[in-house]
Image (cartoon, rainbow, N blue to C red; front, side, top):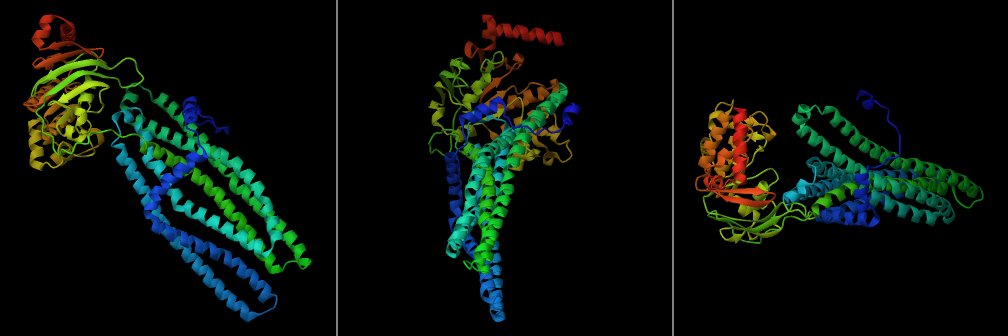
Amino acid sequence: MLKQLTRPFKYKRFELDRATQKNNRKKKIGLKEGLRTILKLWRYLSEKKHQFILVLVMVLISSGLALLGPYLIGTTIDEYIVTQDSEGIMTLLGSLVFVFAFYSLSLFLQNFWMIGISQYTVSQMRFDLFQHLHFLPISFFDKRQHGELMSRVTNDIENVSSTLNSSVIQIFSSVLTLIGTITVMVWLSPLLTAITLLIIPLMVIGMKWITNRTGKLFKYQQQNLGELNGYIEEVISGQKMIKAYSQEDRVIEEFIVKGDHLRNSGFWAQTISGFIPKVMNMLNNLSFAVIAGIGGLLALNGMVTIGVIVIFAEYARQFTRPLNDLANQFNTLLSAIAGAERVFDILEEDIEKDSHSKEEKLNIKGEVVFENVSFSYDDGEDQQTIENVQFYASPGEVIALVGPTGAGKTTLINLITRFYDADSGRILIDGEDIRHIRRDRLREQMAIVLQDTFLFQGTIMENIRYGRLNATDEEVMEAAGLANADSFIQKLPNGFETLIQEDGNGISHGQKQLLAIARAMLANPKILLLDEATSSIDTITELRIQEALSRLMVGRTTFVIAHRLNTIQNADQIIVLKDGKIIEKGTHDKLIEEQGFYFELQTQNAAISEEII
């Protein structure tokens, strides 16, 4: 391991792994894609179009003044220095002071305004992206690493921000300077202008060779950065499991591989793009030498003045400088486009389709009906996760979902909450197809207590209040008491104001479950969904949780998933699932009497309990 970590860096041609190559073949980087991305960016920039116009005016003024300075210097040489006119020199020096002072002011204003525009733009983009993520279906998040998505909200947006801050002004300024420089050069000496333009074909060939490679490499760099961030987030979240199975060496090996991908793509992107200033400086010096040599010969023959040669020498540098700037900014622009494409890829994902119901508040009794419901998580799968499921739940009933792993129990919960919509069949609540009910209105009537409770960084009071944000402190405390959570909360250093870390680090699993029950109690739902709510806890805590759940379930339609079959014996209806189908249905006593699959599960469960005892 140490040998690998300290191995020397080899400068090798960057290569992508097969999966990345396959993914990138599906979406090639080209001029059309880049222009589409720029147009999407312009929609954001256009919200500040009046301020943007002022920036362009300042760019125009600064470019004009930058051209005026060398011309005044050349004029000074021909008309005043050669003729030794000291009074004229002082006048022109005053003009030069004014030109360069106003030039500096215009630069300051254009940068000041552009920074404001760029910060507003990326702020709106970040907001739109963050907002859009909340309206994407759960299936979208199931297929992507969370760290990779975080990279799009942070790294890719920041990449766009840094480019807008500098590149937009630089590109416009370079284009205007280039046009103005060529115009003045042609007016002064068409012959010297033609000689100066001879370097353009060399620039075009060099730039084409460089940008053909850097465009792809910058996109690979952003992809690899996102993948590495996703992997880091996953590893940090799973530290307990990694240490439990002594997998430190393996995750370090994988980190090295992903780090190598990012290092190689970044190295070649920066190395090849770094050729640009070297090539441009070489051509710049070549152009300067040619102008000085040929201009000197022309001056000796009286075809041009010394002042014109000085102006041309300066303009030759100004001619290649904007080309150099454009080349450099083009690479930066490619990098920003690569980041922006990744942002717009998410923004163009289809959001969840929802009902257009204008009903402000949904008041339901809790009747739930499944009518021949079938569903598969993957549209391409032949095997459905659940198939032709149908049952009826009266308001206030407790429905227990039982079956082996993968039978479809959690899938039924996901369909009731509309985390997913059924492929066929209908789910009715109080006779209304839930697809005709807005998701937010539907979920306001529900509460979920999962096996793994997620708690946010904040106080215990804030975490319980998440069930109903307008609840008073007294209502939060009352809910905690009903959930049997107040006994442990009062023992904490700051009680309800105790700050807990993200995901509840610092309190036990059972205590997390009690807080989740308090949260559900505060929400006061009509439909309650319990997914393995009493697993992985000690007996005493389980008794407290069961007591709290008994209070919570009163008067509510409740769906319970439990592997501990002794916890659901009093359910009004037990639905037994196997391979996505309902194979048995009834009360505990009825199913035991039938001695079917449920009876076998109970027998196995009893045998395991005896072995543990």
